[in-house]
Image 1 (cartoon, rainbow, N blue to C red):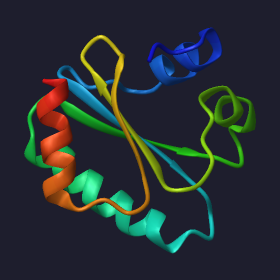
Image 2: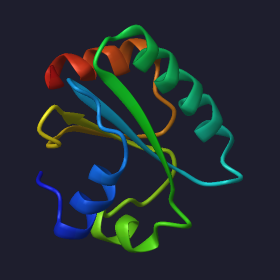
Image 3: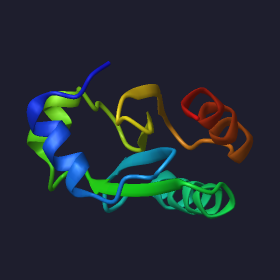
Image 4: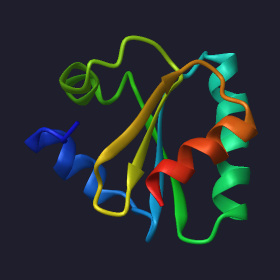
Amino acid sequence: MTWGREADVRIREAELGERATLVQFSSAFCQPCRATRRVLSEVAAMVPGVSHVELDAEAELDLVRELRILKTPTVLVLDADGQVVTRATGQPRKADVIAALGKAV
């Protein structure tokens, strides 16, 4: 998947990782989003060159529509070039995030 123009600009405004980026779409009252934030932050801290970017789905409705984000949390794993290599919904396990990063780096 390649980013649409709007998505590309918005995501690239954020701090992209040197090797990969974990992009999380969350909503304010989503309990699994909090747990997902913790898992993705831990993985980003463990793996050099990986960053975690969290976006508020409610504040980014145009982007959510463009990327067809249907529920939160949704996580996109981007490679170093900003291309989506994996997409998942729901609360991820740390081992699954690390495995998904294997496809990106």
